[in-house]
View 1 (cartoon, helix red, strand yellow):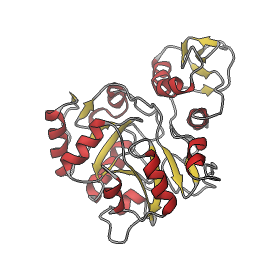
View 2 (cartoon, one colour):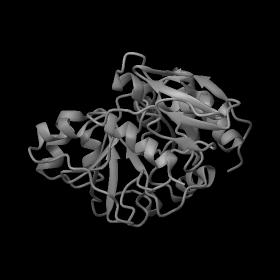
View 3 (cartoon, one colour):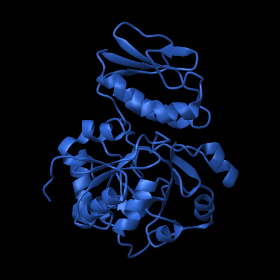
Length: 311
């Protein structure tokens, strides 16, 4: 399917209708969620899903998250146990992805699951993604709308800076509220930290919330060791800028930019990728980031930063 010149359309009925028509025709569109902007396609259309991989330059062993309107729609695609039902009841709609057994016969392209017998699935709360799923009438596979391993987009402009003409339509509904990708849980364990914290998971599932590493096997999105990376070298836990560095501060460390002057980790998560985009586009040769406390959503911030700095 040929791409046209990229276009940004403000969120609204017309933009959703246009995007849904593209989805039904086997195309891809960029759409905001509460976490980051996603690059969406019909999760049951192998050719459409392949266009996501091609646009992103994403390795095909890296699975995608499927977005659905509600738990009932999710149940048509995945098999839920009691723990999954409890997590869904507590956190859906919202920034939680569950890795569950793929229901036999579920209309999900094998490219979405990277050939695994599980599927990563979530119910987003953002009005644009919810409206697009409903209008398209299909579950949507939607990784972040950026080049693979690049910085995740939290604004429509970030999508164009990364993907250019590879995406024909972006629905612009402002900056994403959470600013980091969803928490991913398999069973009772966290595969990727995110806005839903380990502490919150443990309150729903006592004993749950432990964070696992991939041990070299990719079973869910966001597990590649190098990911979410700016083009410039990145130094972590910096208390001051070295020559040639742009310092992104936090709390008492002001820096050239700041994730949160008051030391609020939720604000910091919402500003993380936008701050990294600004630093990457600036004149400084390198980027430094102040220490972020690891508690709560700080675990998600530090996860993204450690992968961004991994070279």
